[in-house]
Image (cartoon, rainbow, N blue to C red; front, side, top):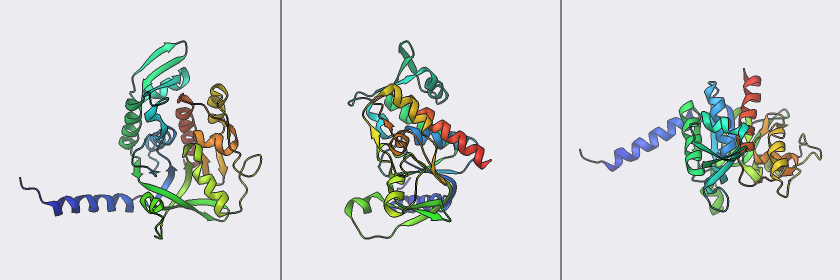
Length: 258
């Protein structure tokens, strides 16, 4: 077999073009391919909901890859272990209700299951802005992350979605864009992003799930972004709340879309 460089290039360009074109209008656009975003994408796609995930970095998985201080082990509690079980991730009991999992295996499984369920993941794309029509978020304004990093003056593209999920972690990027670009009032106690507080794992694991909800018409927070939006402590390298939050947001959206 002879290898033709042009055929290789044509294959990549043609395939990506078709994938992007088919996802310019989706049911749910998730910003951030961390554990919460990937979990949410899986449960949505599993119910035949058209979902695309946009990740600004080259890799997916967010902070899960590094476990704690780059020790690639993660901890989940009993109620979140069932989600890892569903994804086929091997867990082992540490003691009591604390379970360990390999962080690399966990990220790979989350991404694999989400894609095979039907979710489309686009990496290296950043959210510059949102589309708002009649007081509701109706889509995203996207550009290549390299454009953002290089500070190039290049116009973005837009995608339309029925709902947007901010799963960008501590940064809460979609919420921050709403604050910066518009003068809207969020569904928080201050009308703005409240910001996260210092680490308190027990409290954070509870509030992350409770705070994973709609914070402006058409846009939800999920995972750590939720405590940044609504106010709550960070939780460190325990990831159960992230998984449970992603599943909760997916469940809420399934009810609204179906």
